[in-house]
Length: 194
Image (cartoon, rainbow, N blue to C red; front, top):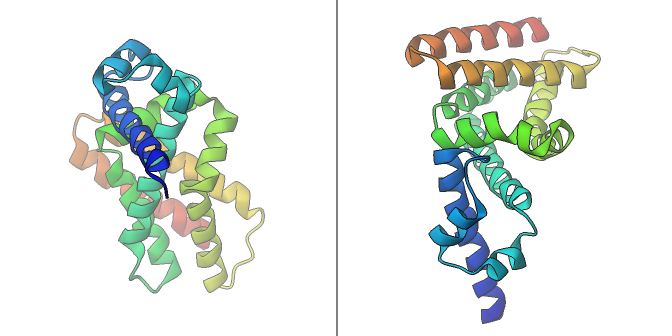
């Protein structure tokens, strides 16, 4: 790779990193382009060379966070042989991530509003939701179940996970909320796989 391309990639990565910190701290709406430019110490032209708009920059930030979430859930369940237990552990890892400020603010709160439901779900499909659906299908297959429609059940499980994650992120007693959320998600998984 030539040095110009490497420099461009490094600049893009720097902008995404800085924007992640700013969006996490203040939220999308309260973070101005001027604040991003100042924190990155770059010109407006340099920013717009990489991102056509603040929304496009937010999408890049969200994609990066979704990759991190997917990697963390895969890592948590990596050594588990039973597909149903692997699904549970992956879901628990996701719930734990709800305590992480950037996940809470960017992925759970801002992304649906900023990107709109359709775009948000497209990104989810490529990352977390895609993993969830594949894990659920694997667990059902291992138990000899032919649950139809599996895609709808996976979407319902995702909705439950997101609501539980929001409860954890906003809860007054995070430990108690985590325990009750994990138990509820486990019951939903058990119901789907019964």
